Amino acid sequence: MPPQYQHPLPSKQTVLTRYGGWIPADRAVYKAFFDDLLRTIDVGKAHNPAVQAFKDAVDADPELVDLFEQTFLQVSALSRIKTFDELLYCMDQIIVAAPKFQVNRDENGGEIIGGEPVGVPLYLLFDLLSNTGAGYDLLRKVKLNTALKDLLNVWGDYLQSANSNNTLNESDEGWFGKLGLASLEKNRGIFNEIYECPDYAAPNRGFASWDAFFTRKFKPNARPIPKPDPPFVFIYNACESTVYGKQTNIKEHDQFWLKGQPYSIYDILGRRDDEVARSFIGGTVYQAFLSPQDYHRWHSPVDGTIRSVQVIPGTYYAALPDDGAGQSDPDFQPGDPRGAIIRSQSWLTVAATRAVIYIEADNKDIGLIVFVGVGMVEVSTCDITVKKDDRVFVGDEIGMFHFGGSSHALIFGPDVKLKFFDHVQVNNHLHVNTPLAGLEI
Image (cartoon, rainbow, N blue to C red; front, side, top):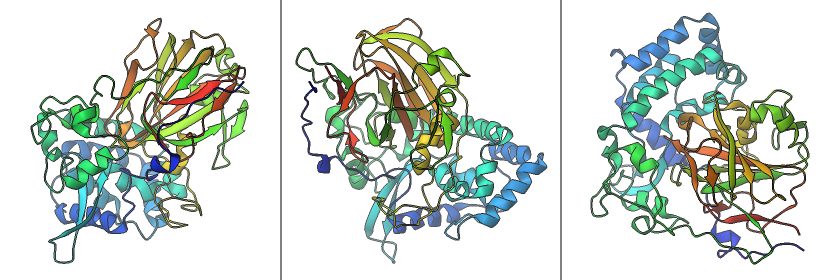
């Protein structure tokens, strides 16, 4: 008998943009971001020490220098960043500022005619660069990712400082301005009603830093946990996120859902020909992604016990090059080269920095499952807050992402007879703790 659950909102009401918060879908807002950024760079000025260290690391490696040169030769004409030096000067500006809500004004620079969040500004610099053959090679290099990690750590320190809350305000380009707040609340609820805020009356809601805002907590009962009628059992959504895909009967070595690229369950879990990894062959993978506007803490999808945890280092901005947005893309015109990393999320489960948490469910028909928190671009800080042998219950916090957007996956063994509910459709935005699937009994 299949389990029953009626999602409270029709699917059409839960669809958000695929790239929201990552890349402005409005070309005018996208242009305004780069116009503002390029207007502020100071060519010839000494670089920020962290940017200079990144430059030195690249210059010291002839292969990286050559790959950067090839990447800029291959990049789409849409790219506003034309040279490595220009990239560095843009980085100077970004790592001493918090992400903002980008507005687009009329031709006279007065009336606001649009706006979208830019939650991962460094990613916008690398987006089109990553969608090239040379960029694919470049952005997977260990030396480059080591240098990027050092740079991102410096920016991360800034985003945890008091200076970083200066975009948390009610101005036109503030996250609590009219357009910014509407973006934060879309399909999520009234901000002051669902989130814990240090000072609800303050323009910045009392958040001491950008990171404090980014990792904000829900109020108790803001995301209730619907209980099934016995004897049914539900699997719950571990992250507030937008559905990317689900795949059954996963093979030992398989093809990525959209890219036709080979991968293995061993790669995802970072385990070599391991008996535990092998136990998931024939099982199910569910994947969804978070926008910068989303709640970024992870919740347990089942009642159970933590068996092990691991953070696996990986890439930051690498993507699988493609021919651009497809015919069914909800936001971009077919062939638009932007957003390759969003379209590469299945591949990122084996390439990007990720947190892997094994949970032994109390229900024996579920058994061992895996939560994989995939750090994407700036957000590659994966913070696990549970440890081996901890008891967890549905809705308990198990970790969080810091600083940007992200993705996650749930992996089930072959004997788990799941029935995904009708609302679990690609591009649907689902609240954390929402039932995703039930067990067939």
